[in-house]
Amino acid sequence: EWIAAIGRDSYEASEALIACQHQRASLLAQAGATSDNPDHRLGGKWVEALVALDQKDTDSAQSLYEELIIIDDDVDTVQQASIAADQALLELRRIRREDGISCTS
Image (tube, rainbow, N blue to C red):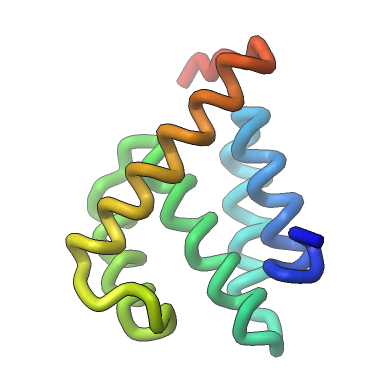
């Protein structure tokens, strides 16, 4: 279901991000962001933003938020994108805790 919604690349990117495989997550998210399917492109951009945020790369995250307000009809401002990303990252970190995953970087 999720794969159909956001695309295989973006789905695998989110799985890699949960597993703290940031480089792999970034590459997969970038691939998803170039999909012909607009929903898959959107999923890829969101995962790219989460990777940047998880790595505390605020400049990259900010730039991605600016892209997201253009392509995501549900997000009107950079602040909304930032809040949504923060909420998603908190959920991602909750999943990591429950699964006993700890990122060292």
